Image (tube, rainbow, N blue to C red; front, side):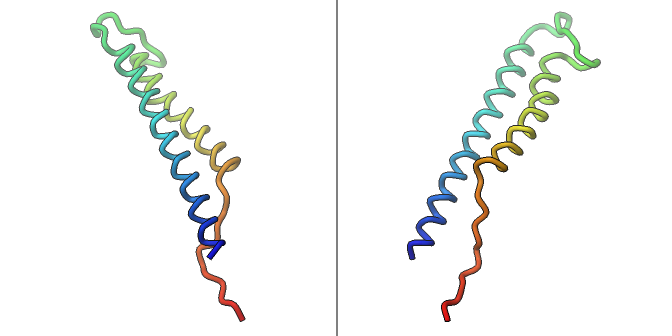
Length: 88
């Protein structure tokens, strides 16, 4: 029974980390998309042919999140066996 409680604690912690990553991703996207994208289209600056707000919110945001998720999973997530071991 103690092992199940520990599994739920780990799962709960990892779920909270996942929610934190989602919130960070939304803030990143919203900040660049609406912060830089609220100008008139004639005033946009461009990065690699894309409007800067789109490049930073969607392209760079995706790259940052992919790296961040990879690092978080490798450093903070733990592998938990889901099969119950039968006691002999």
